[in-house]
Image (cartoon, rainbow, N blue to C red; front, side, top):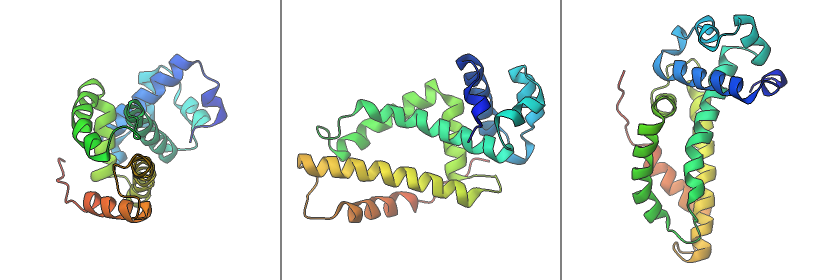
Length: 176
């Protein structure tokens, strides 16, 4: 994750760096992402990037975590004590489409890193996403059980394992 110096930057500069990292990692192979190009686009020295981040891997995981945070923001509009998981799945397709249209680079980075990661950190990336998804699904299941949308005689962990198993094991095509 970024160093303290990054968080001391003005918000506009942090946002520019973040968006540029997301764009480069979304559209270029990891090995072809050049930190100097990112620095030039951000109008900063290449050395400054290393004052803000440890290394390229740190920049990559920050871009992924920020893209994930932006995507998860959409879920905050749903009250999972008043909407079932199944209704959410239906509505989330529309939200995903809107997110794609309004945030193409962020969406592309999430898809690329989750399903056909070309970085040397593929396993680490997969674990990151699995942990995020597991936590989100668990929270939704627990809230849905409290509201009666999902049976409460089945442990939420078991439901999460079922949902995870059916979704993560779908063979996702590569669009390289």
